[in-house]
Length: 336
Image (cartoon, rainbow, N blue to C red):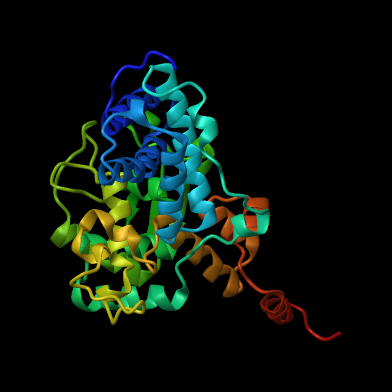
């Protein structure tokens, strides 16, 4: 066995993220932290406070615990892949035995299963937006959900908007790539575009600005559209807000027969993602794109509006059945 130096799991994660930060986008760093938090939590639950003691059996038990949490095979594979990279880093700094990463077995996922990731269903989205409009009108949560569902944009795109990017007269939002001030777009300059916004959604955004937006600047002197008391709202905070808002118990009865008083997804804010019906910002994006396609919006329009290629659109977002596609084609093809 190699000579190892004691290191706590949480401290190791911080070292790893600091190491990766120069090469990863802010969103990717947040994703890695989110995926590794469950590993740190498992270590704490099982009294593993020194990574030197980590074994292959521990990793198997962690994998089993995550699977029993009810996450999909696709999500589990992504989390375990991040743990593998993390353990490789830990081996480099003498925190775990060399080769520990190979002891993390990744579940097999076929391409079709990978493409069928969870999404926010249209009925679910309508219930959420109706509830927000009635009880939390123009709140920060309302404007987050309204923009994400209506536009189908990515979390990073929502976070990138400045106050000046909203044009109520032209009813649009201008999306700009500003990596020098920490709001890059996933596809760079090519992702820059103006996004049309419906009148009712414009009203929600304007009322949020007038009543509930914190009048603050970010660390670069810019005026964020979506704010916290400290400045631009972080991606982690946006993700948590979406998970909290999409829990069914926020606007109706729990469909999983859980007692809200005992449900950790309700009682512990950080665990909102553990609600089986809760959705991530990407799940909202997926549902929005699917809804546009089912409504008959041409694929090239969806591709431009949501900044997604046709191939990716077909593989990962188009969840219409063949009959649904046929009925939409029927509307455009008249009997000869």
